[in-house]
Image (cartoon, rainbow, N blue to C red):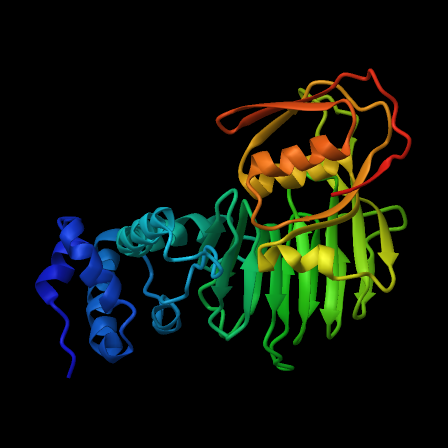
Length: 371
């Protein structure tokens, strides 16, 4: 039997372990042979938190089983480069720090979401992808996917009975088929119902649109806010993309209101046929592919891709659009490509802040640029 070092685990859960224990902790939590004993020890730690937190008891077997979900920054990164060796070590240490926070945070998450969730009485777990990164995830039912830069996915801890997730940002899903348990994805604007399918969903709060692209299977999409003619239901088939145009309306305040109330909703829906999936889902393969991409929306994608802040000092004289691929390029190399393809384009970089401008001394012969 592969015994775990309970003394090191105790130091770890009591936040008393040092960096010398990080390697052992990481190895222990990824050793299948130690899963049974580790699960028992985790259950003990969890019960200690519950005793001190006055929180209703929850069955966490499925959560403990899936606690080994892998957060992959980039499978294609060369492990021979010194910089990435340092990154690899950093994330091993970060993983060791994460688990006690996950256990302690589970109580806080239950308190927060049990009262505030749209589905009262359900606790939620959360997976987050920081700006500039792409993160893979595995859900308790076997469904998998990727989170794009600056995205958050929440799923219910009773996921085996209630396959519901909430998304802020962009994600690619590969959903396990189960006719008895539909899979639901909810954003602030729409809700998707699927059985078994692959699709991409983009719903950043700051974007003007919500986009759903279906690769295989079939999905049903419902708007959560009323449109002209009421709420709408859309059925997507493979290679179709639904684009939901956001809008905001202000209600006339009544005598009890200090200021107008702002209501977010969906203004219009557009269905595109025979869509090329490559530019939509290539991000999960660590490629930023864009086809006839308008200049300003390309800048937004570059911001998220490289975790930078871009300020547009003035607007181009023409309506520019670009076609190209960024894969291993640095942000400066990407901007240099834009500069070479665009007359009058210039930029300055100060750490993660970039200023873009146009001199407007020349005129473009063509407004379609290839990189």
